[in-house]
Amino acid sequence: MRLATFSAYLVAALACCFSDARAAVGPEAICAQANTVFCSGFEEGNFSIWDDYDGNPSPWNTLRADPGPMNLADNHITRMRVPAGRNGTDLTKVLPSQQDKVYMRWYQRWEPGYDFNAPNHGGGPHAGDRNLMGHSGDRPNGADWFSAWMEPLYGRLHLYVYYHGQYQDCVNPAGSCWADHFPCFLDEGTNYCTKAAHRERIMPPLLENNRWYCLELMMDSGSAVSSDAQANGSMNMWIDGVEYGPFNNLWFRTTPNLKISVVSLGVFHHAEHAVEGTEYDNLVVSKERIGCLNQATKRPSPPTNVRSN
Ligand SMILES: [Ca+2]
Image 1 (spheres, rainbow, N blue to C red):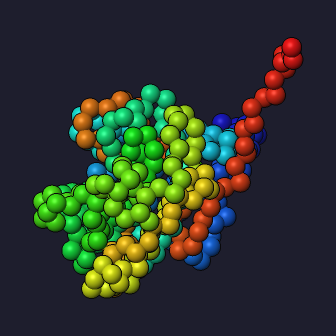
Image 2: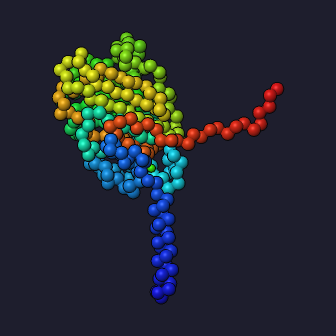
Image 3: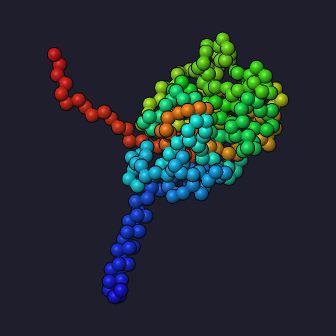
């Protein structure tokens, strides 16, 4: 190649790459703040910042070009689909520092075709040995673990929480004890939702496919105490900035050494389910309230053919 040709080639090549660099979607401003514990806009190009044992294989975990919740060119999101039958797909992050209290915010969109009626579990913060994530049927002992997942139940998001004080569905702490629901909207206090303060103040909305939701939860481990009467742990949940909690007086732990150490996003299906899954963007874990991005609201077009009679 002649030198002049090579120079032209070099200029063209550099133009290509600088222009790509300018177009890349940068991290949200909050990612640089001291109280932020972990952040991903799924612009890393791979899953190497995650800690999953399975390596997040395609086609179940995929990073995809998509305008995302902020409708940005050159944005990427992550999509999770679940293999047929009883199975799950997730992203798991061991936090760089353990926390007593975290806020976790992400954007989520359920694909067209996703079936909200298929029994499922979601993702959220976890304290204790990560190998206990997903353990079910036993009440945590206050020193081993607790976990919360934000997930749809009958099409409405709520928190499904395994912790030492769980009381709603616990015939036998060893073997017949399942997680609590917040807000508890399964009944009006006859069976599950016997603590009125844990029932719904306002009902979470029925979820729709194919739109982005801004989701946030808060988990405060509370003091390490020796009785439920002393418990001051708390959780909260926001959908598009609307607050559905708080849910207070939760007994998470008997030792201060049990702290929130892992977060996950994910879907687990108990049985057969649709092929379509769910998509995520803009995850932030912080010690303080995060809130939603300044989302461009899509207003419906004004009607042009309305006639009054
Ligand atoms: Ca992104």
